[in-house]
Image (cartoon, rainbow, N blue to C red; front, side, top):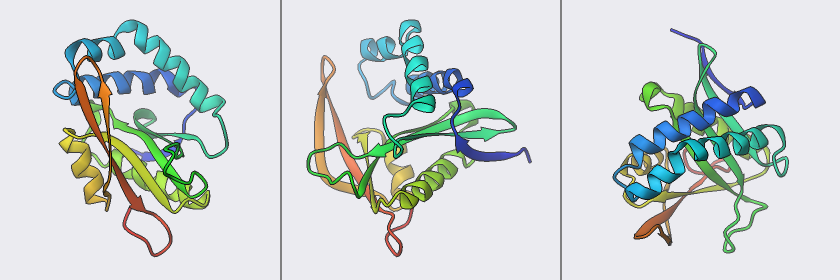
Length: 184
């Protein structure tokens, strides 16, 4: 078995992270987002913007509780996760974090990389004093809802609708990561 693990992202990982994001979105969101929107956020110009943003996330995050992690297999970046203090006005960012994104390259799916990223994220968030984590997911994203649900996440009742030329509904999931809390 190849060496696998999770580590903090480095500047050199930004291109791989952006490429994984685009591949994962094209495959996973093709039935969830309007085609024109998906083409715009995964096109060549968007990839350049994502690379710059992921470089900044890896090298100059807004604060010490903002992190970008990568899953690696045989020194190849195969997935990533980003988290930060929660920004929703009904949540306390001192104790609630947000899993901003967690994506695995479709070419490397179903190999445990997502679970390793989720576990590493929860460990770091606990170390940073967070007790709860939330994530916004597309209501129709049954794969992500099933994945997070299997780790003890559940809807908390919050919903939002994005205007993407047509309404796209997202729901907020949450989990307790405090000592003695829910699973992660």
